[in-house]
Image (cartoon, rainbow, N blue to C red; front, side, top):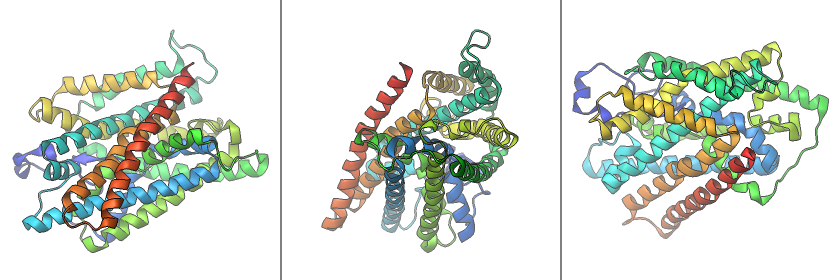
Length: 422
C-alpha cells in the first residue's frame, strides 16, 4: 500500500542488516522475485484506501462515466509505469550497469538535481496525502461506530476528538527508527482490504436487489476532473515500479505481471464502485463503509479497515521522513522532524471535511504529476534523439494531458472541499 526509498541509505547500507525502506517490496528482503511473487508485490503496492471513495465518485460522475474514467486511468497509468521501466533500461544500456534503484534516482539520472527534487517533493506530498486520507477514514469510522448522532465530545466535534485521540499513539509509532516489524501489518492490511471489499460487494448486491434505487449513467461535465482525480489516486504505487522490476527474476515477463495486476485491480475497483453506487444511489456516502449500518459484519469490516490503516500510517510516512531527513538532517534520524510532520498531517486532516473530496485533490495534483507528467518527461528526455514522431507525440500528449488534469482537477476538488465546508 505504499512506496519505500533506498536513496537515503548511502554507502553504509552495505554493512548494515537488511532494512526495508521506501523502495523495498513488502514480501521479503532483496532477492530476485519469481513471477508470482512479482505479481503479488505489484498488487500490494497498488491497492490502497482509494477504493473506498469510488462509489461516492460514481454517484457524482454516473456509473458509466465512472467506469470509463477508471479503466482509462488504469491503462494510462500502466503505460506510464512501463515508460519508467524503459527509461531505466535505456540508461542501463548506455552504462552497462544500473545504479537507478528508485524513481528519484531516475529523476537525477535524466534531469540532475532538479529531477530528484521534483520527485522528492511530489513523493512527500503524495505520501503525506495518503496518510491524511487514512486519518480521515479512521476518524469517520470511529464516529460512525461509536458516536453516531453525537454533536460534541468533551467540547470537540466527534471527528476532531478521535483525530486528537489517535495523535499521541501515532507519535509513538512514527518514532520507531526502523519499521521492519510493521511491514507485515501493511501486507495484512491489503489482505483485509481485499476481504472487506468482497464482503461489501456481496452486501451491495443484496441491498440493490431489495431497494433498486434510481441511477445515473453519466453525470455532468463539471465533475469530470473530480472523478479523474479519485481514479488516479486509487492506483497508487508508481514509486514501486522500478525497484520491483529491478528485483524481478524474469524481467522479460515483468510487463505481463504488471499488466495482469493492473487489469485485475481495475476490474475489482470498477465492480466495487458500481455495486456501491447501485446499492445506495443518491444516498451513497463519501466513505462507502459508513452506509453499511451497525450490524456485526459491518462493524468488523469497518474496525478491520480502520485498525489496519492506523498501523499502515507510519509505513506510508517513512519515505517522507527519509526525504526530509536526507535533505535537512544529513540522513540522520530526527524525532522532531517526525513529530512535526505527524502534527501537520493531523492538522490537515482536521481541515478536510470529506474523504472522497480529499482523494480527488491529492489524485489530481501530486499523483497526476508523479504518475503521468514526470514519467513522460523523463522518457522524452532519455529517448529524444531516437523517438519516432508517434513516440514523441505520445510523450508530449501525456505530459500536456497530465498538466491539464492537474490544474483543472485540483481546482474542481478545491471547489468541492470549500463547498462542503459551507
